[in-house]
Length: 262
View 1 (cartoon, rainbow, N blue to C red):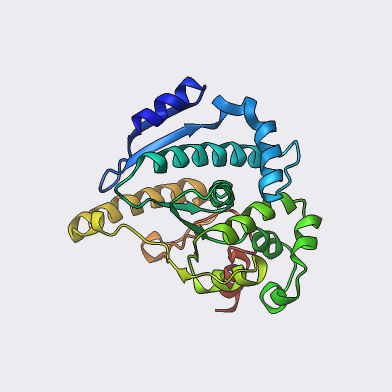
View 2: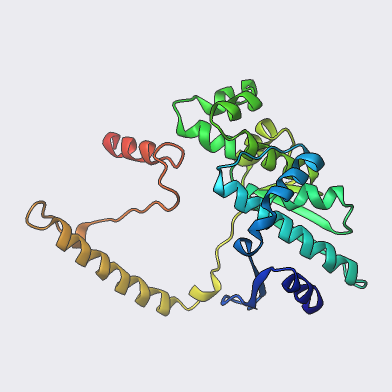
């Protein structure tokens, strides 16, 4: 790894190496996409020639994905060439990380690739609109729908990653159904999202933490509502939803409607 990073450094790539501060302390390599931005146009042209994936000039998120993908492909290609004893598996999550997958396939890099989508890009856009999504999913013209929403190039990256990887997975059965219709490949398996429950294994610690955090919530509610709307905090249940602020496809609309019907 050091030999590869020294070589990349000599060509202008900036990076940071360390340990991720979670259980197991895995090795982490961060690649600075800005340090190699002068190669963007060249790599965009190569991506079109290699995979037929277009890239408009003013989409910064896609530009960063292309820079990252080529850096990852560069690193993994050199790493596999030097690693003679162990098999190498590269696991990519979501379209933003997926540019390297068709590159590695085209270059015949000797490693196994896994691509996991947590929700399809086009599915997110369709769900955010007023569309009867799941009842009509088999009827969508995916290229046309992606084009109408200005995300055709991003969709091409996601679909290219799904078709060029060795193993394609999603995080749920409903996402697998979605991916089969929108990305045109049936996932090889479902890998559910996990929670690290080890750090909460000591029940008394968890209960103490719960009590402290609930009091913080109480204090916020007192400051925000009291004087305008008073209620008994000891007889109050709090419900939270986590995720992106997307009113329909995160189900917030359904949740609020269910409260009115209870």
